[in-house]
Amino acid sequence: MVVSRVVGLLIWQLMLATSLLAAEPTKPNILLILADDLGYGDVRCYNDQSKVPTPHIDRLAREGMRFTDVHSPSTVCTPTRYSLMTGQMAFRVPNGGTVFTGVGGPSLIAPGRLTLPSMLRDDGYATACVGKWHVGLTFFDQGGQPVRGDGVEAVRQVDFSRPIAGGPLDHGFEHFFGTACCPTTDWLYAFIENDRVPVPPTRLLDKSRLPKHPYANDCRAGLIAPDFPMEEVDLVFLEKSREFLERHVRQSPSKPFFLFHSAQAVHLPSFAAPRFQGTTQAGPHGDFIHQLDHVVGELMATLEALGVADNTIVIFTSDNGPETTSVIHMRADYGHDGARPWRGVKRDSWEGGHRVPFLVRWPNRVQAGTTCSQLTSLTDVLATVAAILGAKLPDNAAEDSFNMLPAWLGESPAPIRPYLLQQAFGGQRTLSIRRGDWKYLDHTGSGGNRYENDPRLQPFQLPDTAANAPGQLYHLATDPGETRNLAFERPEIVTELKTLLDQSKIGGRSRPSQP
Image 1 (cartoon, helix red, strand yellow):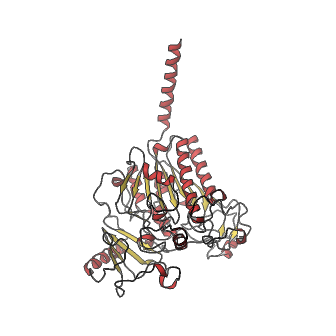
Image 2: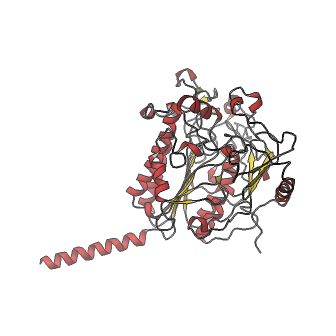
Image 3: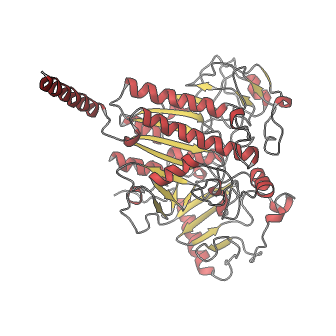
C-alpha cells in the first residue's frame, strides 16, 4: 500500500514536471530595463567609489556579463530611444536630433520600419512597453487635426477622447502603459494606456507642493491629471510591469515575452518616493538611484517567483550619461561622480556623455561574473536579438546594428564592430566616430553643453591642445580622459576617420549590406 502510494506520487511529480517543461517557451523571454540619465559611475559594479548602494544591479553583474565599452547612440533621450528600437542612428532620419516635450511629435519611427518589438511580435512573442516612450506621438484636437507645437497651450488643444497615433502600439508593442515624454519634467503629466489617456489632465501643476532641493528644479509648469503621483511614478511603472509578467505567465506560459521597462529614474527632478527618501548618505539623487536599484530587484524577484528567471534574458542599461546638475551637486556635496572615470556628462561627445552601464544576465548561456570589453552600441541590441531568434535582418532595417551575440557567449575575442558612430545634442552637426582606440569628434567643443558660458561647468573645462583644429582626435588607450587633442599631430588618422564617417553618412549605414 505504501509502495503504491509512493509510486503514485512519483508518477504525479513526473507528469507535473513534464507539463511544466511543455509549457515553458522554447525561446528565451527578454526583459530590457532602460534607466534614464544613469551614468557609468552611478553604480557600484562600475565604480567602487560610488556613494550609492546598488546591490540588485550589482547582482546582475555577478550573475551575468558586465560590458565596459558600451555606448548610447546619442547623448540625449529621444535619439537614443529611436536608435535602440530601430537599430538605426537617429541622425539619419528627419528631426533625428529632436528631444520631444509635452505632446511633441510625430513619431520619429517611420510606418512599417522594423523595430525590436515588431520583430519579436512577429516571431511569436508577447510584447509590452511600460514607462517612458519619448520617441514622438501624434495627439489630435477636437477637429481631428494633429496638435503641433509645444508647451502648455499645445496640451490644452488635445482632445483626449481621441486615440493617439504613432505610439508603441503602432511600432510593435501589443501593450503600453506609460508617458509620452519625461514623466515628471514635461508639459503633460498624465499616464497613457495603450493609445489613450484614461485620466486626462485637469489643472496646472502646483510646484509649491513639490520637494525643494538642488535636484528638483526641472518641472515645467504643465497640466497634470488627478491620478498622476509626481513622487511615485516609477513605483507605478513597477506595478504595471509586474502585472504584465504575472498575467502573461498565468495566461500564456508557453508563449515567450518581451518586456521593455523604460524607467523614469534617474532623470531629474530627483523625486524618490517617500519610502526611499533619506535611505542613502548621498542626498535626494542618491535616494533616487537607490530606488531604481530597488525596482530592478523587484523585477528580478518577480521573474523568480514566477519560475521564469532562468529562461529570461535580462538586459540593463541607460540612455545616456548623467545630467549636468546631478553631477555638479553630487561631486560637490557627496563626493559621488556619476561620470567617473570619464570626461563629460549628458549632451557631450566626450565619453561621460554616452559610455553607459550594460549588463546581460542569461543563465546557462552568458557566463556569470564575466566582463566584456567589446566596443558596442545600444543599436546592437536589435541585431543581437535577431541572432538569438535565428532571424535574418533585411538590408532596409537595422542599418547600424551589429550582432554581438558571440561576445555575449564569450566566443569572439576579436572585435566585432569595425567602428562606432555617435551623435551628441547637436545631431548631425555633432557626430563622432570611434575605430579601435582612436576617436574623432567632427566638431569643436563638447557637442552639447556650453562649458565656456556656464559658470557651473567652467571648473570642469579643459584646454583644447589643438584649439584651431576643426575637430578633435583622442587615443583612448593612452588618454582615456580625452585631455590631449592629437588632431594636428596625427592628421592621417583624422583623414581616415573623417572619410569613414562621411562615407557612412552618404551610404546610410554602418552595418555591411548582406549578399
